[in-house]
Length: 279
Image (cartoon, rainbow, N blue to C red; front, side, top):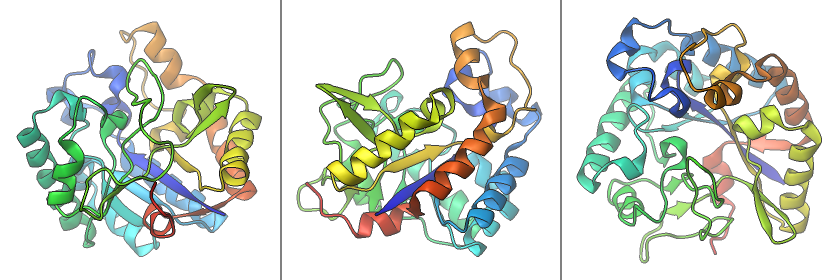
């Protein structure tokens, strides 16, 4: 079973946890570490001999074309994460379409490769955005991996199917939700990011095996380049909860990733989607 490995390419100051304390107008003046960290992720994948999908902000692609070209040269998929991390449910339908187009142009210009995959910032396609998948289909996207079928304080669409499904009747586009696990009647977030970094490794290992063996489906795993960078700047005035989520166990992340990459088989999201039958 080949699982879907993905990286959400954004800088440390672009995360949702800091959006109320760091103004976007200040982004160009902050110390950028995304190029360095993306290179470190690419080196990690090269050592592990795995391929992945890099869901990249257009804002980052425009400023880091060398890393975009390296992603493609190393055999990975380049995909869109939107322009500058605005959540989909904060936009109108036409604003979303404009965001998609701006990001895709920047990513394709930088990488020299067509973009057919999309992941919404903070998994922000949900019941509030009934138009989002239709617009993605109209814009020519083959797949989205933008839904988290859980309840969460920042996002979530618990009514969504847990595995690949077709969100637009008559269209070929599919949605590949991030991985969840079942514990009794509860659906648990288990697809990576902070959950992987903060919880014991055995939880993620158990969750992926449950999806692979019990459900006979691939897992969809993600993380961010800043999560393997314990030397990143600290945001002193961020809420305590945000700081705990963002900074905890950064120094342990790379070792945990190395273990995960060795314990399971991994591939690009577009390759994994191609082998799935939608619900």
